[in-house]
Length: 241
Ligand SMILES: Nc1ncnc2c1ncn2[C@@H]1O[C@H](COP(=O)(O)OP(=O)(O)O)[C@@H](O)[C@H]1O
Ligand SMILES: CC(C)(COP(=O)(O)O)[C@@H](O)C(=O)NCCC(=O)O
Ligand SMILES: [K+]
Image (cartoon, rainbow, N blue to C red; front, top):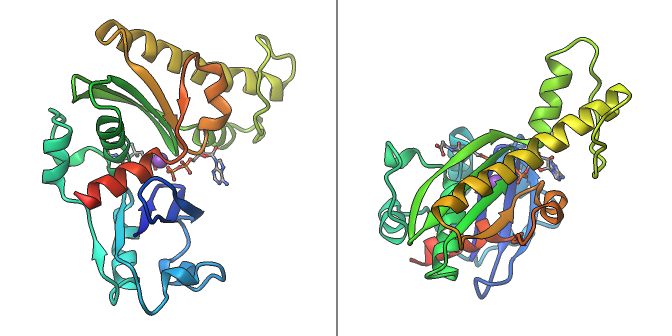
């Protein structure tokens, strides 16, 4: 099966035979799908004996463009009814819950039955969702790391765009270190705070962490499990039905 998952920053193009291992590449979502399909190295996407292509994401305009570009392929899109049965929730309105959050919740629910999970997805935005007793209980959406750094730069005259170097100092003594200290502690504190709060509800919840910024933050979150393919795994389970 081929899976295409459109995030706000990056689009994942992946292939799996067994639903456990994923060969994936990511391209910037800003590129038109027709152009992506022509890139060398992605010929498996446009081969003549095509496998079914699962398509999902959180950028409606990009999904429209993908449907056009894949007009001759066998495209499968996720069924909301399956999600609702697999992961009951009272998000309102139900269809507004993001595709990426659903995929991660599905993977947590189906791969760890009977186990509560705090799912942290550090993408363009950060999502911290709680799965407890097999139900999605709700979550938090925060600005993402790159977005926050960009916001400081674009919203001010004097702040430069900086790259993060973990670990951060407690007290910055130049502009760049002060931004680093601010942004790194902002997210470290936000993640720690959510975990503390959610564990009052579910003391045994495990912590699964995924997304483009997860690898950098995981070591700072005691006991967390880095799951690079959590979204793809959930997407696969969803399409398989
Ligand atoms: N090659 C990369 N391109 C863009 N962002 C990246 C890259 N590697 C890591 N990141 C980080 O990943 C985050 C975006 O995560 P990602 O999971 O790709 O987002 P989305 O699923 O929303 O498209 C950004 O905050 C950025 O800091
Ligand atoms: C919260 C999100 C913007 C995250 O997107 P991402 O960081 O994965 O690109 C996305 O899941 C979304 O658009 N959700 C819809 C609103 C909601 O989940 O309530
Ligand atoms: K994501």
